[in-house]
Image 1 (cartoon, rainbow, N blue to C red):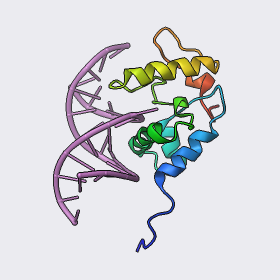
Image 2 (cartoon, rainbow, N blue to C red; image 1 turned 45 degrees about the vertical axis):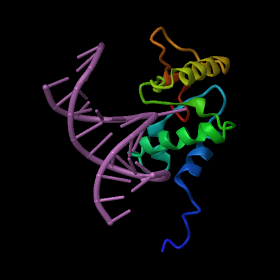
Image 3 (cartoon, rainbow, N blue to C red; image 1 turned 90 degrees about the vertical axis):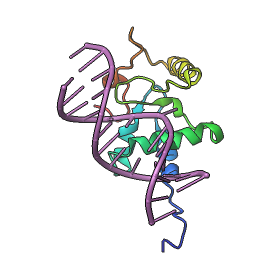
Image 4 (spheres, protein in one colour; image 1 turned 30 degrees about the horizontal axis):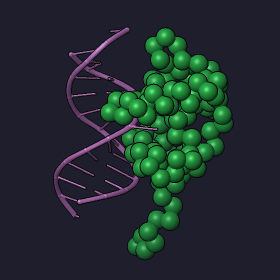
Amino acid sequence: MKTKTQEFSFYKEVYKIVSKIPKGRVTTYGNIAFILGKPRAARAVGYALNVLKKEETEIPWQRVINSQGMISFKGDIFRANLQRKLLEQEGIHFDKNDKIDLKKYGWLNL
DNA sequence: TTAGTGACTGCAT
DNA sequence: CATGCAGCCACTA
């Protein structure tokens, strides 16, 4: 029955992957979802990070962005601003459109 | 169990 | 090139 309450939580996998992102690199929600075997679960990934930021602030959630190479949180512009700052500190460069070049900084990107 | 929400993505207009 | 709409996944009430 699913007797066990899924000791393997989707969130946990997300956290684990995010923690593996090397400094100075970024990845997208879709990419993480793809690694988990569900390329369409990008939303769930973002949802996971949403809960993450309030408890496991130790996770480099800042390195996770959308497929556009930009920061999405519109509602939490404060977080977005913070994220941009943190990424710049890691050496990631934003272009004039506040966009990151995934070809250059994308994790596991070729 | 059904319904609703959300840090997303891709295609259509 | 910029918006809009629908689809998918996991979680909460």
